[in-house]
Each structure stands twice: as structure tokens, then as C-alpha cells.
Length: 534
Image 1: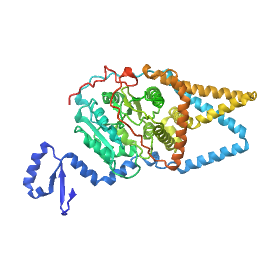
Image 2: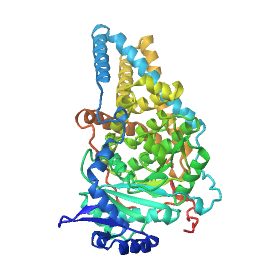
Image 3: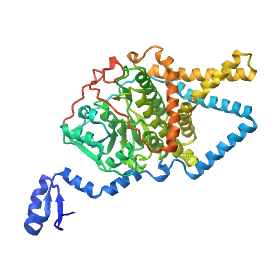
């Protein structure tokens, strides 16, 4: 019901063909309603409803996640107290027992990072290149409604590429509900979308201001209008495999009700641009083709990627959607699903996206990622005993090694190199003590094994044409130092600007790289979408 300027209330309706005849009969019986009824299209009706309930929808978008699991607060009071006491205790030990404290810290760091190395070594032992999972025969009428959410912000340059990529998806159009999600004041992207001809199953969703301006808040807002039983998330520059939705749907059918999410591998299409994009592609191969499949096979906690996630909608809503305040909402959601007793698996048909080609862009993106990992660790550390009970001791320990390994290695890698250099320098001016020799050997073994395990896992999962011999191995120390610079910037932002979302710009890349040409899994035998009659 809408109140017009004349003070009269009007009823806007969008009846289907079958209801038109019934409406005529009602109007004959009550002709006084004729002037107050307005027939409109479904899109106009949705727009009216959104406008009327805009405030409530926005409030729900940034408050969907329960407060206990939200990064709206960086630290709660008990955490702040524990961290303060730990800092005071460490400073006291440094003042009173400097050598023993540094020795203990040195050994503890080495043993912890060795645990991270072991995870990569175990994953490398079973690592393999991407192989498609066969899609079983199916009937189109059995397919559910599938919603795709694509958040866009300042992405006018890639809109045409995005629409073309989504149009290649192999799913009946009547059951494919695609939401292009834009901030209401992002006029250039909105104009670019409206300038493109889109099928009727595409819809532009405008996110009003209110709360943090983050990707997860936009996703929560759009989720309230999604029709699908399954919800997928893609980024603006993504080019997903045409059959990815089919594989995800069949994975849900096989996996049972406790399978809440499947993650598709992310593959870098512009990896040949420079050394930075090559290392980014190598890192993605380690994560999405090596570590995540290994974690999934063992039922461990999986840190999701920020795109190409496919969710069972009921599970997603039960755990509180995406945390609007966490700038790495994907890793947080992976942990939250595990704590609620759900599983995450991986599928084989991936998504091509592009790596940042400039260090400044890469640096800001990496800062946001590591800041989000810190937020995630702090959020799920508020009640560590509850997290322990919900995950079980083994999953809890592995998740802590993995999460703290990402954060700790990023922050402390330069310190480990400096310690190693200091020991070598002392050895140049005279023999080391037995203790010094033992530390030197421990550092050398730890650092070399860290580099080697990272390289082994990437080399086993990348295609031969993607690999650059030993160039990747030689570049690892430099790449990790760059990550460390971003990590320390993330610490600063966590204190000063915890919810700042630094946007990663994208440029169109209107080609699909065949499998034999590198990292794309678009095999010539499988690239063409199998037709589904609508």
C-alpha cells in the first residue's frame, strides 16, 4: 500500500496472466477499488517494496551476523586484558632474563613455523593437478533455483565482460537468478550496467548507504532478495567455468544436508604479465589446488576464497550470513560454518580471475586480506574453549596452526631472516657457541623447508606451461618480504581503521586461456557448455 500525493492510498500489484481474469471479477464486484489499484511489473513492485523497507533492510544487512561472531569490535574486554598481561609479562622477561627470553622465543617461533611447514608437506605428498569430476546425467526439471550474487564497486570497465561470462553458465534461465549488486551512489558502474543488454534473469540491486561500506554488507543486503536454494558469489572480473554450477549442485546432492558450501578453484588468467602476477598465480595454486583439497578430504576447517563459493542457502542464513565488519569475510565464514557443525568441500571446475599487476594495488589488497585474517582469529578466539568444543581438538589445533601461521609468518619472516643473518655475521668473526650453532642449524632448516614445501606444493599442482623452472623458488624470499610489509601495515590498520575496505580495481581481460596455454581449466573437450533446455 502506497500513499499518493493526494492522500489516497494505492495498492500496487503485479498479477500473473492467470490472475488477471480473477482481478477483473473482483473489480466488477467492487468498482470503487478501480481507482486505487495500480498494475505494475514485478520489477517496479520490488523497487517500491525495497524503497519502503529500505532502512530495515540495511539494518539487517549489517547486523545479520550474531554479535559474538562479528568483527564490529576488534577486541572484547577479556581479550584486551589477556593481550595486555602477555605484553607486560614479555617485557618483564626481557628486562630480567634477556638472553633466555630471546632463546625461548627463537625456539618457539621455529617449532611453530615447522608445524606450518608440515601441513604444506603433507598436502604436497597428495597434491595433483586439476582433474574434472564427471557430471552425472540429470533432468533439467530437477534443477533448483540458483542465485548468483556479484558485488560491484567502481567496476564499470568489466561490466560487459562479466555479463558475457555469466551468460555462458549452463543453467536454465528461468531458474538462474543473477543479482548485480552496486552501491547506490556508484553512478558510473550503474550506468555501465544499464547500457548493456541483459537477459530478464539479471537484476540490478542498489545498496543504500548505512553501516560499513564493505563487500559482505552488500552481499547480506542482496541475499534478502535472492530466490535460490543455492547461492553463489562471484567477483566482477570472474570468468567461471560454464559447468561450475552443475558440478556444485551435484556435490550438494551427494554431500548431504551437512555440506553447507563448496569452493571452486581460482585460477589466474594474467599470470604471464610480470613476476608479481606469476607469484600470485603460484600462491593461488598452492592454496586452491593444494591446501584446500587436502583440508577438505580430512574434514578440516577450510578458509574460503572470496569468490566462487556456492552455499546451501538455509545453512548460510542459519549461521548469520557474511559478517559486514570483517574485511576477509570468506575466511571468517569458513570457520563459522565449521563451528556450527557444517562441512565445506571443493569442486574441480574453476574460475579464472586476474591478479594485481602493480605492487601498490597488490599491497593494498594484501593488507586487507591479512587484516581480515587477524579479525577472524580474534573473533573466534573470544571464547576459545567453545571453539575447541565445537570443532574438536584436532580441527581446532590445525586451524590455529594454519591461521596463526598465515599471520605469524607474514609478520615474523623478516625477523627470522635477520636472526639468521645475525648468527652468520657472528660466525664470520669467530666460532659460535654450541647453542649458537644449534640455533643456526634450526633457522637454516626451517627457512629452507618453508621455501621448499611452498614450492613443492605449487609445482605439483600447476600445469607444466605455468611453471617457470626455479624462478618461482628464487623469488619466494622476495615475495614473502613484500607480504610482511603488507602484514605490518595491516596491524596498523587494525588499530586505526579496522573496517576500511581498500578496493582492488580490475580491468577487462576478454579472452579465455585454454588449458594447454597455462592455468585455465577450460579444456577444449569441456569448454563448450552442455545445453540445457529451459
